[in-house]
Each structure stands twice: as structure tokens, then as C-alpha cells.
Length: 432
Ligand SMILES: [Ca+2]
Ligand SMILES: [Ca+2]
Image (cartoon, rainbow, N blue to C red):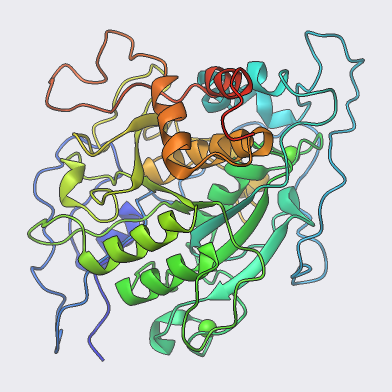
């Protein structure tokens, strides 16, 4: 077995695994990252490194924790593996006036600057009172299932595709328990919460509070990802067959990939991953990927540089590119990813006070996935290409026309604008 891959999930892990003096995402000197050209001791073909876009360390932002303590991860360990359609709708405590209808009362919402930046209030108010979003299935290919109370009853413990038992942390290879293991398990948890956290007056508010999440575990305990596992996970997530694995009973329309490969040298999209992406796209699933966090041209990366991927980079609260965020022609769109000490605030059962605030393109991508799921909830027949077009053309232009003073460091058409995207979808019969 070739040794896994220097594929890391976070800057911190990066440091740990490679001894590289790597810094949290936005630290200045993102010169060349000293990754060994091949994984140490790789015997056969070097496995291509794929790694979830980083989030700087479990640096916990000591945000005040108001009322509700969202940290009762339910006493049972594993949640129902079958997705139960949620009973819709926040029990809105406020009287539905047109100004407040569907505005969540979750205590973190007032500090979720990312949601403000993409216009979520004006998005949710476009839905009938108490009926925000819809039960669209989104697959999170990441560190696996965590029993987030924000997603209770709407989340599926999908499948564990980590084939190497030495890296899996659960004592075996592939199996039907996709539970996240280890200190990085929060990565997939937060991504899922951004997409679909309940509007339940506890913790945070997610983009589509009726979304259904399928966790597809592709990252080992170490945060590393074998491209073969990623390829199979992609196919399975969309409902395509994978040898030796039972069919996915909940095929997803949107696949969130907050992970990336950093080939050294950067050679662009891995053909195996491209093939899988083309297959799932043909099946009708939209692939959303983070652009990665090296401050470089994303086109050298995989999946960010692949065709048929909606590649998302980060912006800060001011709407500009943080230093860590990859850029360039393969980037379609920007979304909030934050910066060190000003990350994306989200519920997390393992975080201090039930929350964390990581930053990175890992957390930008799920904003786009969440909004895409809202669009599908009103226009279920939109194709991946139509979704992509809608999201790109309704984006908010960058503050001074660009996300970065250097014109080469482009960030796509603008910053995700959920309200405008939904308005445009509703104004058209396309995909109805
Ligand atoms: Ca396993
Ligand atoms: Ca909540």
C-alpha cells in the first residue's frame, strides 16, 4: 500500500504532518509550501494528494454564548440513518409581519456575518411563512457524520469510503458507518451545518433549514484523502454504482467538496477525478468545490481546476479576497470564507460553547451548496449548468470591481447573492 497522501484538511494538520511552517490560512507568506514532491515512502504510483481545504486550527472564537446551549448531541450515539423529512419550519416566535417573517431567532444569527453578506434574510423572506427551503439532498464529501442537533432527523450517516484501515481511525476499511473520527471531524460537521442548520432558536441558522444531508466520509482520521476513495464517494453520492458498496438510497443533487489536491507540481485536474465529476454531472448533480487555500491559481488544483465544477473562493466580511484564498480563471464565484480571527461562526458540538469559527475556502463552498439547494427547492428541474449560470450571473460585484488589486487574482463573477439568485429563479419558469 502506498502511504497516504499529504492531503490535509487544515493548516494545522499540515504543519503537523509535514513539519512545514505553515500558517493559518491568511498568514502572509504563502510562498511555496514545502510539501515533499512525493509522499514519503510511496512505493507505487504516488497517490494524488487531495485535501479538504484548510481551516486553520480549532482556534475557537470565544464568542459569547447567549441562551441556548446547543450542545446536547443527543444521548444516543448514532442518529437515525434514514432521513426523515422534517416537519418544516421554524416555530416562529415572532408574529409574522412581512419584515420579520422567516427571520430566524437562533442566537448566533446576529453574529453570522456571512449570512448577512449573501443576503439570507431577504432570501428566506421570499418563502411562505414557516416554509423556508425544501428537502433537497446535499452530499457532504468530507470527514463524515457527526450527530449535530442542528440536522437531527434530516441527516444520513451515508457511507465510509476510507479504504485504508490504518488511516480510518475506526478499525476497518470501507463500511456503512460514516461517522467522523478524531479532532478534524468538526470539519464536515460545520460544512453540513452551514448548508442546513435548523432554524430552531438554538445555535446557528443554516441556509436551507429543510435540506437533507448525506455524509460521505472520504477523509481519514488524519484528514488525508485517497483519490480513489474520492472518486468512489463522488459516484456513490450521486447515486451511481460503486463495486462492493450498496447503492445510495438518497442520491444527492448537490455534492459539496471542501477539499483539494495539491499536486506537486500542480498539474491541474486529476483525470480520475475529472471522469467521476463528468459522470455525476451527467446524472444531474452539481459539484461545488472550494478553491483551496494556498493563495495560488486554483486551476492547478483538483477538483477546483476540473471542468463541470462550480469552484468557489473565499471573501472576507469586507468582500475582498483573503490572502490564503486561491484565485484565477477556474474560480466561478466567491462566498464568505472569512479570515483568521474572523471566521465563519457555526454550531459545533465539540466546540467551546457549542460553536466554532473556522475560516477557509472549505467554508465558502457550502454557502453556494446551500443556496443551490434552495434554488432546487423551488425549481427542482434546474440542471447543473442552469444552476451554475443562475448563481454566477446574480452574484454581487466586488466592492471596487475586483476582489484583489491584482487583476490576475480574480475571484469569478462576484460574491454569492442568495436573494438575487432566488428572485431570478422564481421569476423564471426554467426548471419548474
Ligand atoms: Ca471504516
Ligand atoms: Ca439552529
